[in-house]
Length: 304
Image 1 (spheres, rainbow, N blue to C red):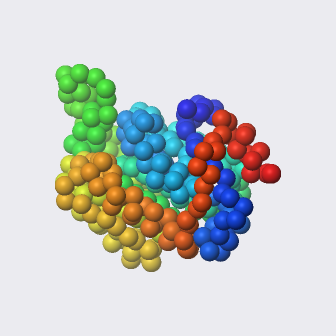
Image 2 (tube, rainbow, N blue to C red):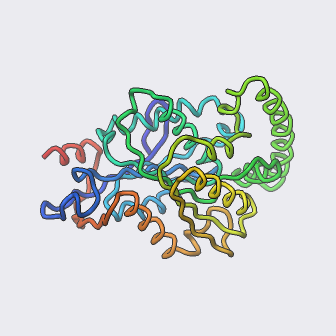
């Protein structure tokens, strides 16, 4: 676990490719720059869970950055998300990978909140991030429209406490969201900028954002937290804007549990999408045993 000004994240670097690897044009890399996959976890997600998704990309020679925002941010401290978004993007410069192709893999509404604010930062014309090239986004079990019961359920499920305290938290969050939701909607009638600062407008913000990079949706009709028809509505709206949208829908998996049940199909969908976003085959030949103790060792190896 790394810490950068209170941003707790994890990062994994691939082993360097052999010198005789296929040309950049053949594998779809730009000057053989490794793709950077930024994984944004669901509410209560732990590194041991998120790293399993990162392995899909580690095996393809990608750099993976894994981050899960604290549970209080999405519900009670949305104003922190802009700062979090900038810190995540700053990591690309810190590790000298700001010109590498970037793909996001986000989970549930919690990951979507962070992603939405990253998009806002990238599309606001900030000169610090003008070289960042996003090639696509994978969205697992999201986004969902604002539903008090579902949001409160997700929050209580993320707590590692006894059932009684979860029950108390469930009703406490419902009351809080009901009150703040009314205030947010009233304020948005007079101050449209409120929509960028309230979690009640996540779905609308994602549906109408100005980005046009490809999207892959992974979801299930059995999800009791995020309704599948919300996701299909999002897909329709993005397609109407000319965005390339692909998807995989299952009938039997619960919220953010698709990889556990359909591992091969899930991994294949992510790998195919990665290759599509990079514009060609990205089969890499990796050194099987070479590993790095620190990020400094990796950066030195890149310069050699």
